[in-house]
Image 1 (tube, one colour):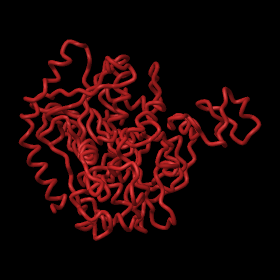
Image 2 (tube, one colour):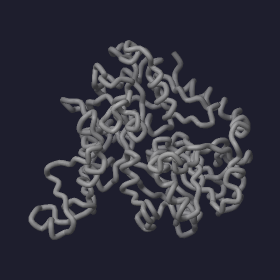
Image 3 (cartoon, rainbow, N blue to C red):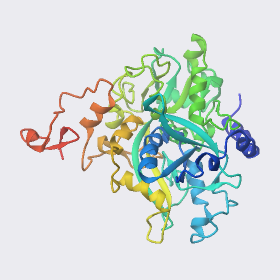
Image 4 (cartoon, one colour):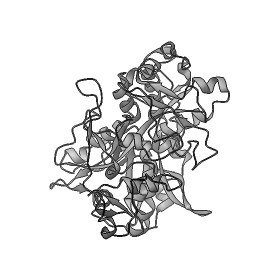
Length: 446
């Protein structure tokens, strides 16, 4: 069995030698979009964020003439590239100098409406210039501080985003056992052969992501195993220009062919990725499931959602399921500390609610991407890493403009919502209860 740290070193060396191969396989982006009048927007970071980036890409193109070119990379890798950018550190000089390790190379994804189904978005790939491209936006599901990068000076701007769960995914629609405790996870991921914890005793069937990924960091914060010390296999192939670590874990899980192996298999995935493959009302033919997780001090295990079939993220939103983090957008900034260049500011203004987009709401896009709007959260993580007691710091949270009822109605396939939620058309219809404000079709407390 190979420790992930050794596997990662091999991945890096292969990646460095495969840039030209990637460029030869894919059509150059300049050939694809030359003459279209579209301005490229280079985004890199957490593959878990790609479903949300997809939702955002179409209105950006149709209304702002911006074409998102996205390269998935571990969250902290993306943050480090932005932190290393000499274009930022040298007062906006040396824009085309990629010698500082700040650029992205090779293949990037771009998106379009499916010509056969207007409700679907297709993904295609093209190759960046061989000299590399500077990043406009780095997206991370953990903060820059967690990544060991200080992006607090005026040359950087930070925009917070929605919440996302990390799951323990399995290739079964009826897993047995159906749950894992934090103590079991400590041995399963912290020792070879799963530390002897049945049935997860084959580390070759534990599909993990790199130590600088948000999935590994957030799982580590709850089970107490450093991400660089996880035992398991990272199935990502850097020679595949259309692959990323999340899709590699999905494919590895889907490739398990026997019931005996399925029982011993577990993969680490963000819910924004898993939920498209999860067996549920939304996808009855889905082949994957999430294990429930029993955190320290709990007497029962919880799914991120209220059940294995739901999408309401209720247990996560109320703090019973601690495996989650928040999306962060980082950009270069001008001397006033505002996002720069202008193309990046358009995106951050949409996230901040300052830029209206016709026919598009960030709330709807967030729900479709299986993230959770912050307005639907009832707890918050004050930091990604554990506190003094070795556990994530969760605190009660009251959103200034809550949207919990609207989120549950939108997220669940049957558009069901708790009995305590009252539909409404205006504030007058909410006057008789404790929830006085009509927001997004439901009476809310504020």
